Image (cartoon, rainbow, N blue to C red; front, side):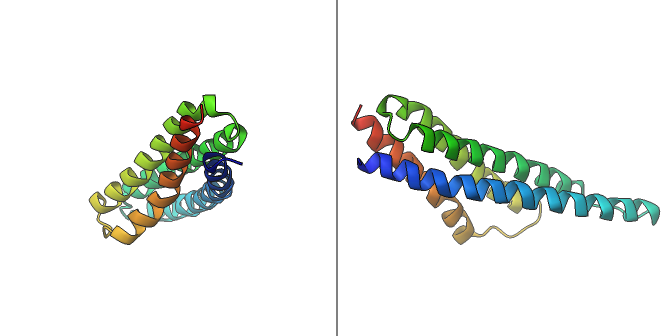
Length: 136
């Protein structure tokens, strides 16, 4: 097993699990927020729409991470598909960084450690794709 194949397979499996959990938890949070919005409307209270947008983006990011993981696992032993894996890894990395920026803009705290941990897996995935590309 080449290093690139191992990186892509392990990172891909973790991304599949993480993406799936992210989708489920975001959907549950969106359902809870919908209930809160209904109560807020009943009592004529303002609710921050950024929370809804953030949860929708979290679902989209979870789907992208899930797809990236599937692509990585499916193509880990195909060096000719390294470019596709690289593209998906960059998209997930950019999404992770964008999420941190939007959190900070929305009034949340910018957490450098969170950005670092959220970026670690996509970076390892990208490294795996690059190592696989060298084997092509």
